[in-house]
Length: 345
Image 1 (tube, rainbow, N blue to C red):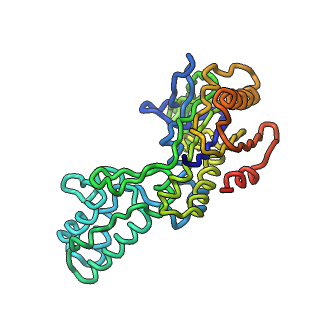
Image 2 (cartoon, helix red, strand yellow):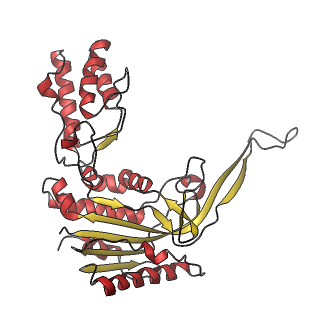
Image 3 (tube, rainbow, N blue to C red):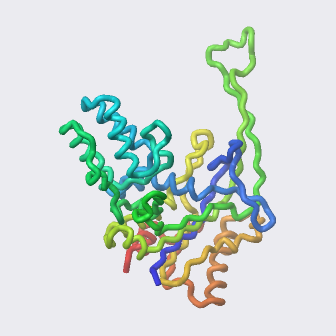
């Protein structure tokens, strides 16, 4: 069985609108008979993946998710002196390698996650076409790579419907974050004043708006299959461990940016339990089926999380070989010790 790394996090946010639904309201989930705030796993992964912290830690080993590859190639061909008709045809052939194109366009119909070496192959081919003033040959369009050395593709996977041989199975699973307690979403009614309005004739606001918000203590869960990640990265264990460390730090420190300028919603995790072992992974969300109702929610949630882990151990046997906890609420543990714990023994 593979070696799994599991992270259980408790992060508190003051009034905020971290992740909005189609109406602009905070996303929710109904759990344990109560409505909870929710932040989707898609939102979490994107903010972690695009954070400065993650980008700097894994510079040179990150892919690009885009539909605009063909448009970029076409622009380069045009800048290189290729006629517009030829540029569109040639760039379309290159982009088509990564997925179906929109009708009468060189833009992909779906996002494609392109690795650094695939991007380099595209750039090299584009330069060759400009220099030799010719269309790409069929054999030159073998641009996809198996097990690309992109840490984010290794972690979160990719799917190419037209070329399943180049799919990558995700080595990381991320749960939707939910509050450990019930919530009531409130409305913030706000106005904006025109600085040049003296008020002599009109004292009304220049803009009136309304936005939903709520505060909450969120439980988040991340599971990483280290062996799968190493396989995804062609056996590069050092890069896999760098990716695990970067993801863990981002999960602990990086907040969703929804309405961040309006609410200043930046937070570090107050509590982290990290687990390592070859046992089958499991979330500890069941600890919060009964909503936390007390006034000291952080302490109660931490106690509930630790007790639930112990109860799983009592029933099923040890569910992890090793554990390490960081408790910023009580001032116990250290971030550096947690990072050292995540390193391969």
